[in-house]
Length: 469
Image 1 (cartoon, rainbow, N blue to C red):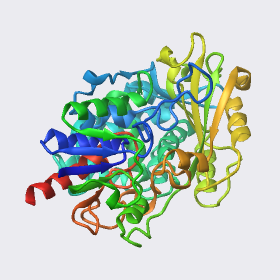
Image 2: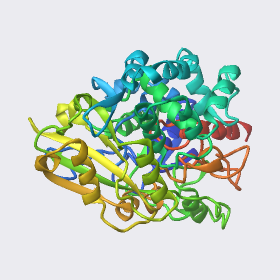
Image 3: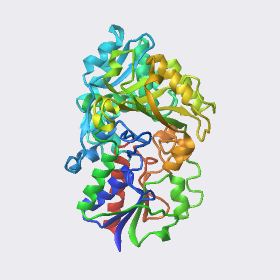
């Protein structure tokens, strides 16, 4: 009998498996797709030689993850590549605000009226980032805070809505960039704890950057898999699990799935019925005949580029997709240009480019024209560079990854109390009605992103159970 079986070979499932195998437990992973990866894959979606990331592409939380940093993943081929600028936020006049490794450079891009306010905002936390990140990403009760005072101070700044935090800034440049950071979790700007979301992304970029993985995001999953196998674990692909009886006997079962999929497989009935799914994504992967012709010089050297003319425009786009049930006319876009730092992703002289906007959950329309009109505002002539595109709205995203219900790439709405209390109100969010069954997906704290911490935290609950039995 195995000690643990993990269902789903995404970053969280693989991290949970590694953490258990490192502690001497026998572990097997079962994945429905023919390759590992989940939200960390790389495929030729457009033309031969163009390697795209169908899901996550840039990894500020991955490079800062306490779980990943404790593993020798570089021995298994994982290499983080950093663009000259982690992130840029261009404006229609050709200027840009930036999120640089340097706090001073970032603050200077906001202008003199907001430079000091930004420095004062991040200064109390940046020098203690490693401890804060561990405490923040290990919550809830998986570990006692190492620095409860700093964590409490962070909570005071981050628990209010981001719109309150943005009152510190007087000009549009800082407000727009910060609103864009919050929008990475696809939540309205007015929600509780959205200030913490923006702060985490800003601090992560200052601490260790906003990199891509050499060769594509698949290398993260591949490194985790290779490490797991060296630890004695096994991985089985092309193995769909429809009920617990499909799995071999084990002392514990760990699911890197959506909560409702787990309930269906394990026979938990309506246990997760109240779990909400949020806005969907409409994503386009481009093969380009050269770099994106951004008007703003800073955007040309940034790994990630946020596209939204103002805080108001970003807020309107988020409300349309999240609350009003319609696709925005001017979508806020998150874009990644891996070829700026990794020429291996495309044939010589060509580039891959990644972009998505927010749409209602389950939306079946086509946002391509709206996305490209928005890109043309900030990069005139963009369409002339397009060699091929691969579009994926909510139905296709959900077909590629069962955790993306209705195209929700956060595996559940990251808004309201559900941003912090996932997947339901519980002191043990990784536990389920069955003492031997656990949940480790992004539906559990600390939530979405390729960082493995949901798997790490769930593994703690599992090995405590195994040692007790």
